[in-house]
Length: 396
Image (cartoon, rainbow, N blue to C red; front, side, top):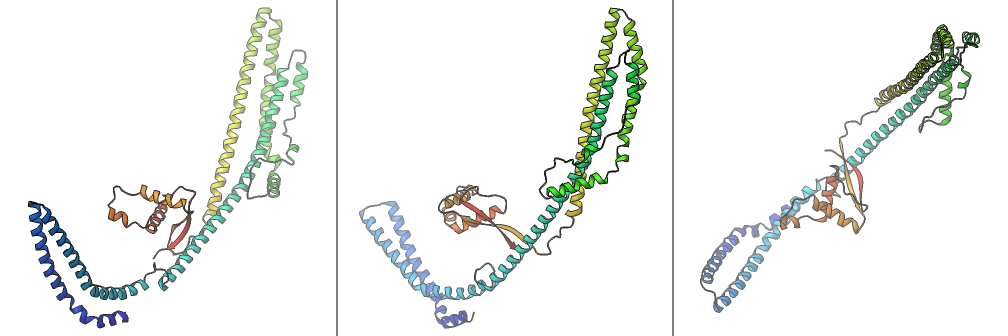
């Protein structure tokens, strides 16, 4: 600023002459304009060789006058530029967007710190996500293990029911007493020894195989087998009791078939077969429904476990402090191919036609900044020759 004051003081006398010079230029300009208008009127009326020469001489004089105007006002323009530079130098020194200024260095430190805070936040979120995923896998293994045990018992019950049905279907008048004795002494207890060393098909990333095996062992140990299998034993007992209670009617049906004539036997046998086929189809339907119910139950358990995991660990993520920042992008080009891609993208996102003056103001640096700003709005250049780098800028 001191330099600007000195320049102004030194050139004050010259500057005071500016109004006088401007008045002189206006006077000479008015005279020139009068000559130009007069010549224009004459030329519009009649154009000939003499008029052609006179116009050429006049245009040369105008060029000379213009050059004189420029040379006479140039000292004043230089003085004003020097004074303006003195002002803008001070302004630029306070601009944090001007590289090299102390304000720019402060802004750089802010951006760097904001970037670190954003990265810390991302790291915490990633750590929390991994905890959630790990807990989800643990819960999925536990739930799958419990489902496996339940399914084991359900399958065991189904096999025993099938076995009971096979025994019932094999009854005849000759072996009736033997079949009855076999059913009344039937063991309705679900076996458990086959569960040792079992595994579940669960893909895991965050827990290792030995951890998975430990979880399975813990689940198996946590099961009170006598209590757990009681409802399954009861189900078999009820099923067996129902079949035994039907033995008398089965015997009567067999006796009726045995004493009937040939035609009646065929009819009764057909009725028996149709009933048995209906019972078989109903049994298969109940089996399918039970399997679907088991799968649905398992999915519900897993879903509830995922929600609980997200609640337990998701709420523990600390939100970044009062540091305000925004995410932006900088573009790195692979030359020369990237030049065409970035200019093409800019052109596509402009309104055409465009005035030539406006077009000429678009420098390549300005085009690049436009494309970087578009990236902040999720509008990217899809090219192998244009690479984006994420940057974090602090908000002022």
